Length: 245
Ligand SMILES: Nc1ncnc2c1ncn2[C@@H]1O[C@H](COP(=O)(O)OP(=O)(O)OP(=O)(O)O)[C@@H](O)[C@H]1O
Ligand SMILES: [Mg+2]
Image 1 (tube, rainbow, N blue to C red):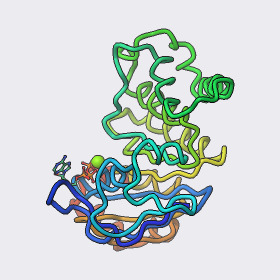
Image 2 (image 1 turned 90 degrees about the horizontal axis):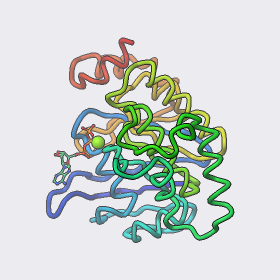
Image 3 (image 1 turned 30 degrees about the vertical axis):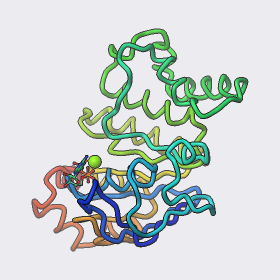
Image 4 (image 1 turned 60 degrees about the vertical axis):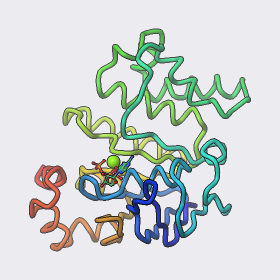
């Protein structure tokens, strides 16, 4: 569904991604793992059309989207939930959710999908008229994910959805990602919680210094001594917590 070939990208003349190739098959959850500053968000931003492609190609749903405009990419069904978890604090929960539907004009279906998001995240329904600035961290994560769903994605890219959340909330977030995937939405999941991400995903890529260092089936990676050593060795501190958990 998503096919990335030999992608090079970065900021201005600063190259961060140096030849990334990555595939996500329809209906799967694929994890993209790696430590701080290795290029995970840069990759998602480039796929979303927010950063220019310097070299290589990106194909989504059998169409070339290399250097397509961000709103075209969203409209084609490829939607990113950013790491910064930006909900507009002075807007209500429902107003924030409706922003996700900005590329759509099918009013009746938008209303239907809003109810769908509310049945996924009942707490958002309870808080629909509250300012999103009053939500807890876990609720904001649900809100930004719900906003992504309002774009009617075929594929959702989630950038560290579990970051900075309490362990109990993290479990809930991962359960929700599983539920979303069960509805047929393909998922590319960026995480530092390596163990949880490998349990959820079928396939994973580990990125380091703008390269794919290792890729493979999750069940193979989770038992790979080299992976354990790499993530437990202190190179990636946050992830080692994930593996120790
Ligand atoms: N706007 C920017 N301008 C210049 N360099 C940037 C910019 N944003 C990120 N970088 C650099 O690009 C590299 C990769 O950053 P990126 O945000 O992709 O990492 P990441 O893997 O998402 O890390 P994290 O897990 O901390 O979110 C880092 O060296 C970072 O300093
Ligand atoms: Mg990041």
